[in-house]
Length: 430
Image 1 (cartoon, rainbow, N blue to C red):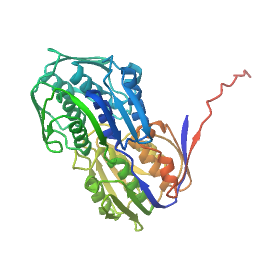
Image 2: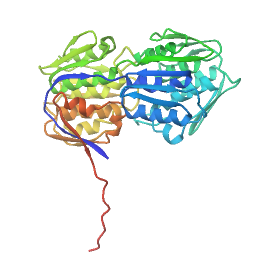
Image 3: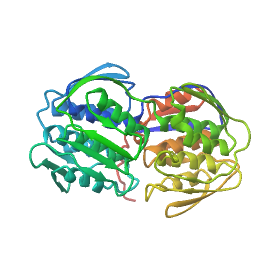
Image 4: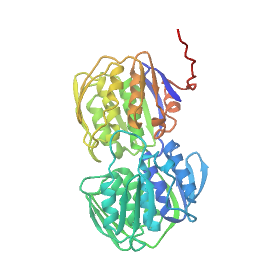
């Protein structure tokens, strides 16, 4: 029962350090199940999805040793179950990575269907297609049950009917210990796919081509352990870039890979935001009025769907009419109703939003409906005049480490407030 209270209208000035990539961490941590040894993982973000995965691994028999705020040792040599808790697994969208990891190492897995944010159905048909191509029998219901027919998966040629980040990563995990060579064609190319491949290779896997549309995995007998550092979070960095674009000011955003940010930087620059690239940082400032532009989300290296709500908030404050087209998910505009409470003028038709820029937003009570929408509404509250109260902030804490603390350090007037449980009132009859 927490909410953010935001007093908006303050430009942001200072430095923000980006944490490890959420989308990489939630794949790399379950991938540790493939390792018959000790993994040391560094630059781990402190977010609720990561904490949940640690609980799942411990329940399966892994030893989880937290070394400091951003480093952990995972020892999965004593796994005694291939069926994670239903209650834990169903709370996280990335739970399906447990299938690829457990199936790849132990030849079987029973995992609850994914939960987490609710902005549309997350189909797993391409995951299942890949597992079956490698010789697994898969059944679906409340659980995904997968069993390798001969106890070990076999290498196969797999073509993804559409580009899918989750399926690419899941099949890659399943294939690293398979017998023979697996190729994934029409593979997704996102930075966190490359990061997962690099992690697995550092543990002893043989993966080539990650980051291209054709990945080749030569199965090995075992993974033996090692040390790995997770990449910086592209979407967290983009969120703070959007925040300074919306509020004005100047931020030095540190611990980024500028190449990963180009798809976001180019759109903000079209809108009149100044971005200077340094070795591992971006200096972002906005002092002039924002200009309209059009945005279409696409698989990497296109504009990321996880930045669509944040860029829409910025466009809501730009001069003129902008068009936002969602090219990845069917239903990612649920947050628009909340944004309109603040005075935004947006009309949605299916996967397209028409955004009429307004002079200013006004604070109001609003609710987050998923992770990235929640971040977008924080940006809106920071830019709005007056006070915005934002509820359901547990979604935001799934993927952003200490957002409130980082924003307060650069001049935002934002705080987390604990809400008391509602009291039951006695009914009176008049």
